[in-house]
Length: 249
Image: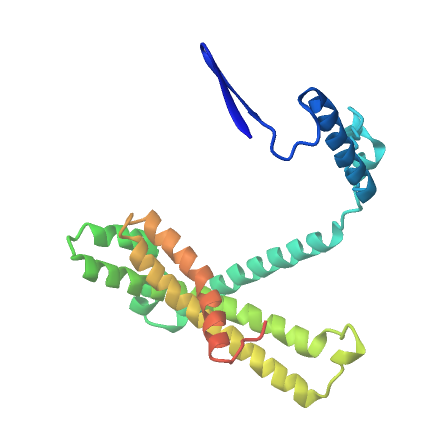
């Protein structure tokens, strides 16, 4: 039974379908339902999630354990730095020896090309009004010639290092003890790798110098030559790994 009672401003609806309590017993019905719901939840024994809070001390960062540092190995980096310095000095000294040999053994014109300052040469070429392709080619060719003695000196120094590693240095463990034929094979592979890397270094240094002068005649040539010199060996390693002929370290 649904009845509507209208009063000025609002309407009241009352439904007594399925009601087991009278109109005056409605609060008891609500309380009974609430108790049944509460008992059902209690019987399920649902876990109550807690959120414990634990604050660190305000001066936690100043604790003694945070001020300690593990021991740092300073000997190995120092030795590596000394090796790098010795290698650089050896390369520069070897190049100066090659320059003097070139002056005495080859023609004056060839020696002039080998000892030319590529950066100054690119500046002079920029004043001649060359086209961009011709200018780039001439700078790359000049850089190739001027950088050849430096790459040759690097090849000699690295080859001497490989001789020391393969034939003179004592092995660190028993696994490195192999016969003379195996040492020769290893030495040949390493010399081959050194030759490939030096060749790529010279080639990419020339290309980098030729492209660098498009930005600046002097600084562009110098920066491009350095970047190409570093990029050449990396490109060689990647290419030969793709060809499944990895280069020796």
